[in-house]
Image (cartoon, rainbow, N blue to C red; front, top):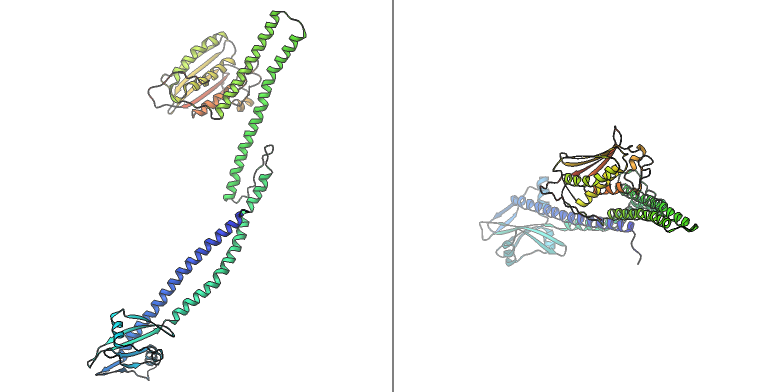
Length: 478
């Protein structure tokens, strides 16, 4: 079964809602019209009944109408009010006065029927061959033998005609209105959905190699908001695809160098005979290259697991000052081997909420990076301090600093500043990328800048912990 198009659904929905709305209004208007017409007839009938009583004269056993036939106003009122009129004795049902219209209808009530009329409501709707007649009965007392009943009536035919005319008009207007509304709805739905067709056509031309954008009409409506949201998504996908391409190219480049070295050494070893010592040297050199490959692959896997969300941090209250103090003691040996002074200025009791193992790796990467790019007789300074609502870790060195063009890419994968800070240095360029991920996972931020006196300074800010019982234990994050 072919699915219904959105345009047809919108038109059908719009027409159905409009039909229900019109029918509801028509029903409400019908009952309102009927109520007002009915009330108008009743009020007019009661006014006529009350007014005609002033022209009735009752004497002993007789009753009749007395009025001035020469007075036009009086004559018009009496003739109009008595169109359906009769006076009948209650005791025996004798009709004393009866209008020609009432006589034509044959409305003659027996004493028992009169008693029923008097026992019921003041108004009575009587069905006749000529339609419904509404009567109002009024008891006329007399001093004679009995009491008289005056009946004044009005035809309900005007009300029935008005309601029938309304229904007839509605039966004609409603279908025409719905057809016209459906057609206009079809046109409006097509006009409203036209931008979606344009966007769908533009989306068909989008590929992974050429991420285009959906057109924005500038109307600032919901469709423009949808196109802008998709365009922002495409921009993020474009960035992600670009990162994947850059990652693939970078890792291929990083793997090619050690593999080329391994192949060259193997070819040289096979080209000529060597003694055992020379083979040991070749194998030792190759083992170093294997170690570089293993370190780079491990770092790449760790970063991939981290960015894919497979690694879960275990937050605890960590004494950052104590953590840095223990690590700096371990790095003193490496610093002395390069004739580098390691200075620590640690404010005590700086507590942060985070994973101690990952915070240790972050600090270790920063401190190792500073030592790696500091020349002999240089200095690496480490400082922790507490701010109003943050803890700060500052790692600075006296190296050659970072080139301005390299500063925006310092946390990119496989990026190594060239040439001043990366010449003859091992590493795959993933350490600072991992540092940036760790800081972001701890809801902090990292900033790097060149110092005026030379070298670079990395500043990490992390939210303070409210806990008073820090956990300084080391957690293995491998």
